[in-house]
Image 1 (cartoon, rainbow, N blue to C red):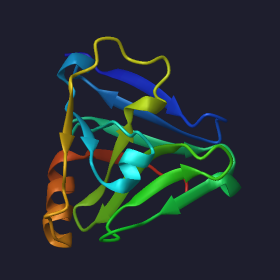
Image 2 (tube, helix red, strand yellow):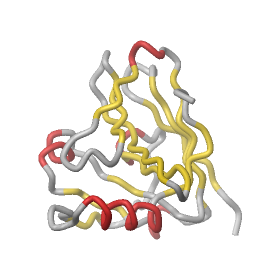
Image 3 (cartoon, rainbow, N blue to C red):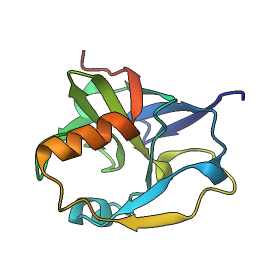
Image 4 (cartoon, rainbow, N blue to C red):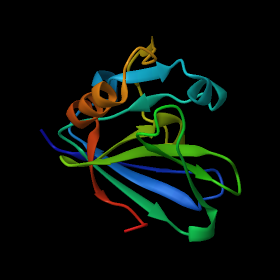
Length: 144
């Protein structure tokens, strides 16, 4: 199946991503995490373990890497416009991430049904294992 690249960015364009997947948007696993951070940002997240994710920053001063709760992932925010674009983890297994589908432009047609989900019962180890298995391999980040 051919791979399709989706471009995303924050509102002002300082932070962006390229998400590559062979899955059609109707087959994406889209989650509405119920934690306070994700609800506050109205985040709808997706990932593909068989895909690829690149993060880029047009203005490094605007990149805010934010960690909360179990401190296991960097949530990427723009200091200028406040948009949450993606999240990234680094582990012994590699670098993995997910995207906030709301930053994709143009918005994918026929995107999957959103599933509300809560991860609050996970400990840090369980969270990292889940992310390594389900999140998208990250091929490029601007801070390395």
